[in-house]
Image (cartoon, rainbow, N blue to C red; front, side, top):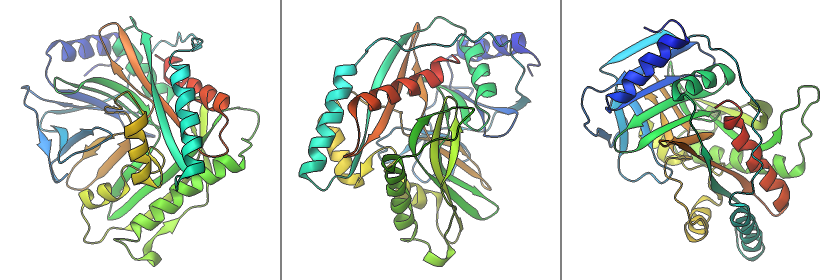
Length: 347
């Protein structure tokens, strides 16, 4: 197994050259990189989320979930890397008019319908000629609280990301999820000044998850933490943690109840999805989808945020934000730029 950066680059490049499905991932607050590798190009799909492997599903999940089995598994400590990061400023106005029009359309719809919030997104295409292996290694060290992954599959293409949002975590009979919403720049010297806009946005997500969990769990069994600030790179978010003992409920049942949450769709969810289908002209693809490892004892599923599709000489980043009646279009644009920089500052 690779013990330094050069060995990791050679190891990674060999994996990609085989053109067979593999995924490398590092769970939050760990130092271990895990590899699941296929020895063929078969497209494995799950309809039950009971198979052991790594799941990778799009924003609009249909009947089945693509996964890579963990039959060929390797584990090793993430090697150190040479830190030569140069801060990247996403200075161009790529898709700005498109994004600003989306924001305006949401605010208009909120005034005329039952919509309270819609999460809109956009793409940012960035030329990219750096070492993909080095970039992945940088992410693992830059974002210790995120699930950092590199996914490669002929059916889906190659994707890389560092997501801070847990969708579902099951260990030792305890089911956990989180309500993550609201975004401000990270400032090392000051506490974030959360406004009513961010507080309301996060409360909407919290209320939705509470209501959904009560459909399959007793109300008294669900514990909820107070909101706290969760850092993700150059950004901070508001977060509340849910915890409930797992009863006779399947992983698939919980995922179907929770995904997509208002944090990536809006409030109400179904009406927000209808709005997005009518107004977002790009496909979200695997952005804001579901990913993570599942085995017979543990489930670690995440929402695919802070991610990019890796092309031959470019990256297609996906960024977005929650729009409410209080949203300011220029501030929302600036927030989406900062989210793009979260990845680009490292990659």
